[in-house]
Structure formats: structure tokens, C-alpha cells
Amino acid sequence: MASTFLPSQILEFASEYSVYSNCILSIIGLLSNILNVLVFIRLKQFRENRCVFYFLVESISNSINEIFTLILTFVSVIYGNNATNFSLFWCKARYILFQSTGLITFSMICFAAFDQFCSTNYRINLRQICTIKLAQCLVFTFILIWCVHSILFSFFLGINPLLGCIVINPIWIRYVTYFFYPVVSGFFPIVFASLFSLLAYENVRRVIRRQIPLERRQFDQQITAMVLIRVMLYVILSLPYTIYRVYSININTQQIDLLRSAIERLIQTVFYSINGVTIAVNFYLFLISSSRYRRQVKYVLKKKYWRPMKTWLCCRRNQIHPDNTILSDNGIELE
Image (tube, one colour):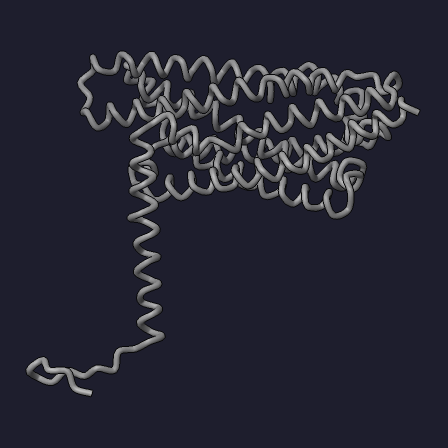
């Protein structure tokens, strides 16, 4: 009796935790990434920077991810948790969209770290490697690659009565175990982004020795700090989920009972929510890491958005309530 009641309690808690954490993180993350997009596209200094261009693409990808997470959460609340975990349609749709946006995000973080390393390097040939045209080509190419890869990935998914949506093809299981999770979306981007963000930080520490204008030097320091703190958060929060995914792929489903299945579901939900923080708080991290960014956000939101909106609203009110006062030639008001 207890052995059947306990798994149901665990599954119920995991379901409620998933709903609340997804809603909270999605709302916070959607606001965070939208604010990033609004700031990046309106400040000229950001529009001309390649590293910020990668952050812009990442923020758009994260926004799509958060919107779909909200939709999936509302569907699970309305139709029940089984509608999303044990439906083949939602299984494939979730993997296609979440995996595509996740891989795009990881790629943009790696590109930003490498670009900042090249931009701050004392070697001229390295500084000339990265151009805005190259950045656009890389972004377009990798978005296409990850979308095709995720669609192909969905062909090898199936529904397990205990674990829900899992990879069922044995060849594909070996691929995701030994290459995809450890290399493509796991340890390789973590090591790559960490290495080049630290090298960029070392370059900025030595940049004072070069003949660079003060404004450019301060901007390089700001972008490097933003890249470094973004990579640190990515490494800390994505590593546990990556390790768990490698472990979960190799689970022998024939040896899992109801209790272990419930515990596995709870662990997966907790690690997934921790990984979700990675794409939800980048705007707030940038605010914390850079006082210059805080001033830029304040300037953009106030001068580029609030004042034009206020002017537009005032014009609308004037159109609704026209002034019928007529002035004579000497400036005296006439009715």
C-alpha cells in the first residue's frame, strides 16, 4: 500500500513543482530577454558590436523558449500532466523547440566568448578575424544546423510507460550518450566558453598597455565582464543537468519500478528548473556586473522608449480634445 502511495505523492509534488517553477522562471525570463533585446537594438554602440549581436540572438532564442514553456505549462495544467509527458506530439514538439533554442543559446555564448577574446587580443590578425559579416554567417548557419538536427532527433523519440518521452533507438542512444550530450551540448561548450572568457578577461587586464582610447577601453571592459559572468552562470547551472542527461539516457528501463521512476521524474524536474535559470536571468546579471550597463539601460528605456511613448500619448489626447481657441492678430484669445 505504502509502496504505491509514495510514488504518487512524489509524482504529484514533481508536477506541482514543475508548473510553479516553469511559470515563475518563464515570466522572469521573458521580461529579462525582452529588456535585453530592447536595449541592444536601440543603442548604437551595441548595434555595432559583434559580441552584443550574439547576445541579441541569444535573447531572441530565449524569449521563444520561454513563450513555449508557458504554453506547455498551461496545456499541462488544463489537460493534465500526462497530456504533455505521455503524448508523442508534445514529446516531439518539445524536443524540437527546446533543443533548437537551447543549442542556439549555447552556441551564442561560445561565439561571444571567442569573439571577445579576439577583439581584445593584442595581435592584429586575431582582431581582424572576427567581423560582423562572419558573425551573421555563423548565426545563420548554426541556427539552420540546430533546427535540422532537432527535427532529426525527434524521429528517434518514443513514449515509455514509466519514464515518458525518451530516446528509443539504440544507435541514437549511443550517439547522444557518447557525442551529443558530452560534446555538442555538454562539456565541450562549457570548457570552450570558460576558456575563452577567461582569456578575454586576461586580455582586458593588459589592454591598458596598448594605445586605445579610454571610451573603447571601458566598453571592452564592460563587454568582457558581461561575457564572463554570462559564461560563469551557464557553466554552474547547466553542468548538473548535463550530467543527469548523460546518466538518464543510459538507464535500463526494464529495471525501473514505480518508486524509482517517480524519483527520477522529480530529479529531472529539479535539474531542469535549475538549468532554466540560465536563460532567465541574463539581463539581471548584466545589471549586476556593470554599472555602465545600468546607466545605458536607464538611458534607453527613458529616452528611447518612455519619452516617445509619452509624446505619442499626449498627441493622441490633443487629437481627441482639440483646442478651438482662435487668436487675433495681436495675440488676444477669441472665442
